[in-house]
Image (cartoon, rainbow, N blue to C red):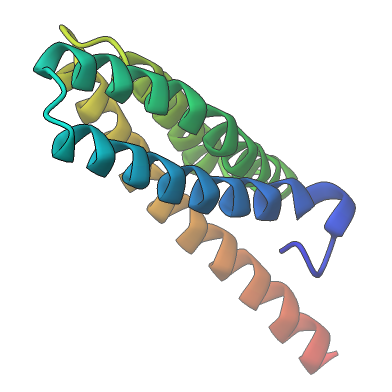
Length: 132
C-alpha cells in the first residue's frame, strides 16, 4: 500500500518501523528489570508505559487501514480499526484489560474480513480492466 500511494498509506509503514523499535527497547528494559529483581509493581508500571509508547505506532498503522477501508467503502475494516483502537486503550488499564483484549480480538477479526473484502474489490476491478 505504501508503494502504491505513499502520501496516503506511508504512515502505516512508519508505524510498523516504530513498533519494531519500541518492541526491541521494551524487551531490553524488561529483561534488565527481571534480571535486576525489580518488584512486580514496577513491572506493572513498565507494562503501562510500554503500552502507552506502543499506542503511537499502533495508531499510525490503524490510520492506514482506516484510510484503506474508507477508500474502498468497506465498513468491516473501518469498524475493526475503531474497535482495535478502543481495545488497545482499554488494555492499558490493569483492572479492565480483559475487556480491551476482547474488543481488540473482535476488531482484528473484522479487519481480516474487511481486508479480504478489499482484496475481492481490487481483484474485480483488475479483472474488468483486463477484460476490457
